[in-house]
Length: 295
Ligand SMILES: C[S@@+](CC[C@H](N)C(=O)[O-])C[C@H]1O[C@@H](n2cnc3c(N)ncnc32)[C@H](O)[C@@H]1O
Image (cartoon, rainbow, N blue to C red; front, side, top):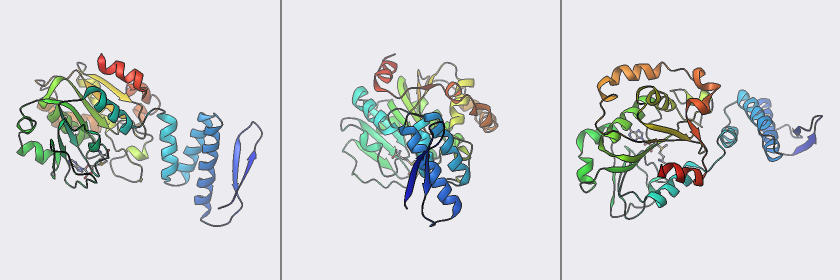
């Protein structure tokens, strides 16, 4: 579609379509998105973010969400962060919940004994000899297996929770993994930094969707002050990192139904204006993260 570029008063870059193809809202959203990209490129991130939001006000627009994610979370992507952590920490054991096509599972080093769990795994690369994938939900897997035996008698050193994008699933996964982990193990949780209310709703209404996993961070901050909790600003949806674990803690498991109810009552509006503080956001740059991992 042909476009014209102009500079408005105040320096805002404007894109206008010279074509009549496509619905009017679709075209307007696309122009706003292109303006957002230009303004980001011109070093005006706040204006770019505003334009993205205006485009998203017109329709569900995946590219505008991706740009918004890059504007709010400006560091390395979650896959790059996980790759560097595997390389740096070289965990002896690893569990991943939600492997899908294996983009994150493929980052596991060949010498790491690893378990992947996913009811519908679609791995593009065959797992290594020390890696097993179980085609089950995580609840089914934890109810029917002895993960420590499957990990060669060793406790979990690193884990990644990336299954169902709903708070109570992430909470149950965290409880299972903490009980199996060494106290100085690392538990990563995907999708902890919601971009807006629509993409953080419990029903998926947008192609770009992080669900309400962010509630896990809020709940752990409230009830487990003994844990070290950060959200790494890794696009597209933030990467939670939970450390200083207590495998003997029963604080969460003993009150699970009550805590799920409490978590579900947390409103996105209560964190919307102060997300970085509410979710303990830290930059996604490797030198800072390496220091954090050593602390
Ligand atoms: C977002 S994808 C995982 C992406 C992958 N970790 C990556 O980074 O490429 C989520 C996966 O969770 C799986 N899943 C759905 N329900 C699950 C459950 N109850 N337990 C474990 N995995 C589940 C889905 O089948 C899907 O493949």
